[in-house]
Length: 462
Image 1 (cartoon, helix red, strand yellow):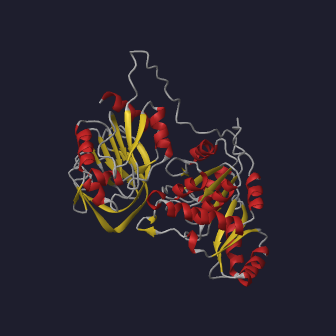
Image 2: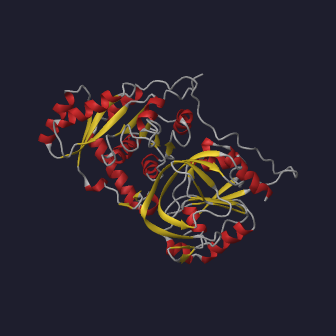
Image 3: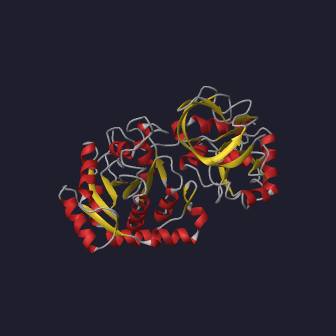
């Protein structure tokens, strides 16, 4: 049976390649539509944590990821419907080029695959800065490559002048694809980048707000919003059987009954240094019976009172190493919790924070390992299996994940490693010590809800 929300109007914003302007157009469109009074559901294809922050700023709603590699194609529709529940329209920003996906896996995890799974029309953002008539050949190629992908229009980006625009429109018209927008270069919409991509919203404050406002104004002025909304409304229902994903029933607690214990308190790191997290993780923890409490390792001098478990996701501790190191009170609090045997889940940035040192500066010292910045970028999907029993998974549990960092931890694995990588190379990685599970691997718990349930249960019993 099709969910009543499965007909939510939706668009996928894609491009021939990275750097074409997808984030500017997608975020600007979200902001422009929100400014018109629409409830906009923001989504991002792939494992990216940073773009959803800009999406959330544009819409006032949580940015969510749709990743067919991490979660499986079967969860793309349900996760989309979960995020889009109650919204007027959904905007999905693609990843890389339209047909680029997991290396060596065909269309898996590509924007094209997600568009097909959602039966959503695609708007192709083309960087037209160094071409005129050739744009017709480019658009024709993308339109004809996969007949199942419906490209409903083109937005021309970085157009130099009115004459340039006329040449481009004439060329695209010959392909039979409507031009739904034309954008000039604008410094006000540019977002700064560094070693892992855009600087996250949490680090930019009012500058990020101003940039998103400028993106919205640019898209509103340069694009045909009515035509874009009309295209989104033509998407139709999702494939039969699609229903919104749910983290599970939230346990009902009755404090008046003495036999029931209070929910275990799980502290989740946040703030500018730890901005990488999937919204579904905290939803799964809450559904498993935890009380989720946020804290900022840059400001809070100790963990929240009564913390029974700790989750430290990804981010940029290398950028804030001095401040994190200077917060000795919190470092001591984290170390004491970990040494007590309480469950601690640390991914990437969390792994670095638990090390003895980061770039020579003292960290929490939970792990007998040191971390440092590296010139080499480690990036890609991973097929992994749990090597050791931990607070997150039993040995033998298979999960897919993603690595994205310019740091090195030495040694790379403890006596009890966290994961054995099956692809693209075979190796062990990470640490399982006492209640600690620390690894570079980013995982999406919606793919294996038992992870959150196991973690919360360990919080109750540790």
